[in-house]
Length: 517
Image (cartoon, one colour):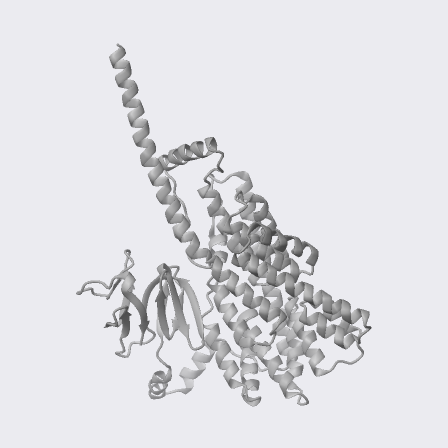
């Protein structure tokens, strides 16, 4: 009987440890895969780089439109990739392994491993950053605060990102004291990192702006000088108040007023002011700067074809057509937001807790409100365009029908070859980007178009081909200098590159350096 008991006990223990070891390995693989995908999606260092550029533009070079276009392109690739690979599907075995791991971590006084909670954190971060990008600072600030309260690891990248970007949102909302606390906390918790560097940079800009403002007040300088100083320091609310106290504004002051309104989200009011500045003939430099703002607004912030057509025509008149070309070129590289579609399509399932269900519904509601606000601003902008008697641009379908009625097939054939050949890059989430070249460096793919480049996770690229079938092949260049050609290159499940009908050995992932025409 004792032998049977010991044999059974040995068998149970053997089975338990075998199952536990297998489950632990499975969980660790899940954790490793999740960590790699998370880093590719979030791209924290790139986010710091873009924020640094945004700060320099905000405080030092407000009218550098090329820098602004580049920042918009870079920001569209951050936290804006397909997250299907991050959707954890944990089996009972994985949950058992996670329980064993967390039990050991508890005994060693270590925080529990929370893979599912990290997944929720990433979705929250995506949403908060999208709201920040679209200048919905109050909503972004609220979500960043919730993230700060819920993130368990105070020394994680997620916490550092949250503190830094929450501080930036608070600055844009005019709550500078609260912003200073968040930024100081980021410096204290993450010394020597790019997060601390950017937090210090933002604080130094704020302190310098406050110092200049106090100096001007103490010297009793004119409201004109004070308004300019407030604008340079990013205090847009005070800038507007100061300018409104002046009886008459110069063209430069009217431009500053419009820029302040734009930064505060009063886009339609700013556009009305810009249009007047573009039409005036007394100050050509201001007209050019105002017209570039119209180009940026019409292409990036509040898309409007009529406004773009008007500003392109004015750019030609002002001798600034190159700016219009550069802005449109940059626009083609900006990725549409994935998080919006992902959240709105997400269904409330029974396995979600009441708290998670409430938060998901709140995020959906915030997105809907944001979209409604955008529609309202679009309507206001359309009204301004109409009031200013800017010719309306017909929709593509209407233009096409008119062209077909008046144009012979021969003319259509002649116009088709005039379009320049480009590379068409298909992404894993279904989006397509047109560019001149694709450069590969490590786990990063850079889609190059003229002066601009869009950085994306290498794994996100599905295929590369030519925009039109004209017998032109896509050249794949390897690290050894070898050139291979195909009308289309496809990245397989292993990451290697093959032709549509693979008759040769695939090109190994690590050997690929670029794709070009």
